[in-house]
Image: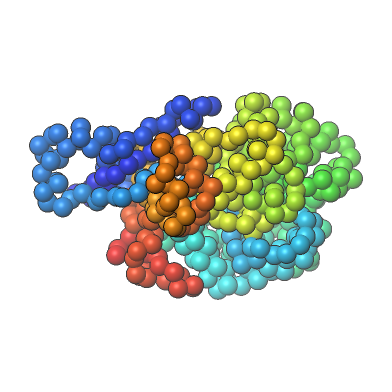
Length: 455
Ligand code: GUN
Ligand code: ZN
């Protein structure tokens, strides 16, 4: 039978909560049983091995023993795969950064071959950072979406992706038209949405780079395919917000532009949402839409301080995101560290259970996929990560002095990145191991990956 037993310390958030620090499940010596790619059982090892049938497994080496902490695979709710190569580009804020670095980079994805190589590299890097699900912007080129889903399906990962819609205020070479954007997106939805573990996101880049006609057609598409995702940017930068007032003078505010086109609903993911009016908080809260808090990106581009406490207080669905290439790390631990600092600057201390929740169960629940991923409840897809508590000498020393799980989690998120990831499993299969030799589809940078779970 296709069954694996993983034994070690296990932490997850089994249900949706506004108090993750009180509602986590932790097994210091736990078992996670995986059958046919799904979680079949989670519980205390002592209880599990009481049964004579299970006890026998111990003698026959049928148990995978883990030294670090097992957590659910993390979810990055907003990231641009074509931008991985331009991460850490110097010195500009959003609108200049887009013109100077982003658009020329994205031009290259007209080439199918280029897109394939970068998509494989990116998916491998997600796994190396413990991220097993992401909501991903491709480029305006439909073939960039094919490249991404081909790469994610090679390891059977649950991923969301969409073709960028953009028909003005960008170089000619990156423009579609309202009609071609609608048609190509529809074809991609038919090809990829719910194809295996792939899911589609209708992806207007942001309101400035779409004409009203294009946003109207994006809304039509969203209405025709109500279970697709929508992903875009909202109120990231003050210059951008002023520009929206010029471009859409009749809209009450930035979010109103999306709202008037039927783009604010469940499964609509808005990156940033820093400079919001009161009305926008209300609409985000009542619509079931989600904010992707992108801390490292917001610091890097000098965009502003996301008001986490206010968004939470208003009951808005929240999640955490890297927003690479404006974000400076794919690691959702590094992004938790930046989230903590952004909250500190506003006199809120973000609890480490809460920041981990934002990239596991919290993100999954916000996005309506927590029956599939984000926790380790029986019946969910077995995507999980083993953390390496000894990832660096300084972290190691700090962790040895921690007295509680909370202190440990906080030290990991503050001090760590991909060094914290020992192994990553997707659908119960090993897809990344720090220790392993290169095999499967090898990476372009000489790191150690597995593409199909075989060692
Ligand atoms: N706004 C529109 N496009 C982008 C992008 O690619 N990155 C970020 N951070 N903001 C955007
Ligand atoms: Zn973005």
